[in-house]
Length: 371
Ligand SMILES: [Zn+2]
Image (cartoon, rainbow, N blue to C red; front, side, top):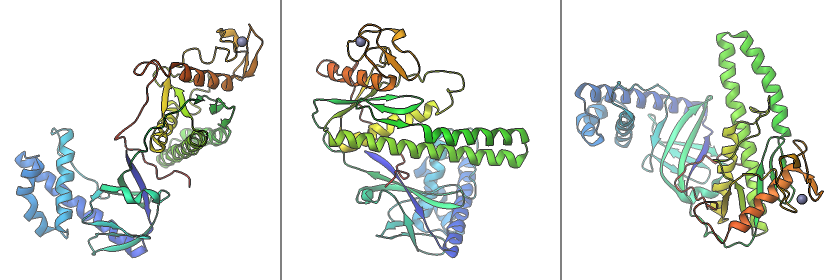
């Protein structure tokens, strides 16, 4: 499975300046290559190489390999469309490969306009280092330098399991398992409450700097949710691994967050999709089968006797069966139904109700995964 490792570089002041100069040199070279490509209407990498390589190599302080990477960047940019001339920002991402970047235990050796730099780094997923394969993007954001490195991690064979943990996704509890464990959204709520007030104040201000703050802040919020999703998915997959069970989770297509006024934006649909995709890829890496279950009626069905009624659900949090009197936390009851559906469906369907979902080739940044 392809993943993207996020590696944060810790350069000295001088090294940081060298990296910034490298960005600028590469991107102005890219702009010149792009202008040539545009003028002679040549966008194919191979042909562009012939037309520009020597010129760029002589005019810029770039290594041969870096010139090749710049030509490749321009050619790729024109793949999207050839209707406008591509221009590159001075500090836009640049791509490295193994000839100009290598990893040591505690530092990276990276090419720059001032020669090779040995820069210390932090990465929470260093266990994936043996699987580094292919290119890395050097990115400058929020005044920090990151490498987004592609790794190709071997997957474990999918284990044969008898039982499944059901996972219900919701608002009050972001995730609830069929064992009755809740992963609370409280932490998220607190941050959100603060965020709403803060955002409202900024929006009312409406100045340029307020807008800038707003943008910065929404990035923070997104990163926070991502962190929460990593934490929750990691725990769920660990439970499945420890108890030798598979994971049953609601099928995305049918999945709707209960739309109650004021609740809709609480966690965001993308955040649920992200949580689900994190559960999937972490499971695949661990060899744990994941099945997607049709969520129809999972919140209205009694997990004890199977009776289905809308009125079974007394409130957001309470389930109480009108037929047999069984009562339980509503999310817990739904999670139990999801687990039941997975176990029942298991021997029959493969392509419809029950879908094992390997997400091969999907790049998911996992740099923020907690240790
Ligand atoms: Zn019942």
